[in-house]
Image (cartoon, rainbow, N blue to C red; front, side, top):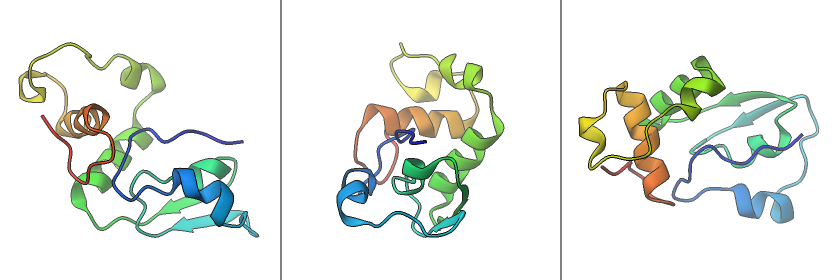
Length: 108
């Protein structure tokens, strides 16, 4: 089972993982420098441990793990700045990554 990344991140492994990284040999995947978890999402049926030092990216993952799909799909898509949105900070960061593909910091 494979999923696509939930957001684009600078240095993401999604594109290169299929060709250049071997399939996991165990049921647990530890993805250091997780970013958008491009490798682990190709094997979504496995147990995944994401290791991320960046507090913003780690917070976005904690948000994605705890909320429902409905809540993510309900995030606003029309606005002038994420600062004006009445959603939690982690959701603002997620939207900021959506708006600017392949960046290392979410934008407004």
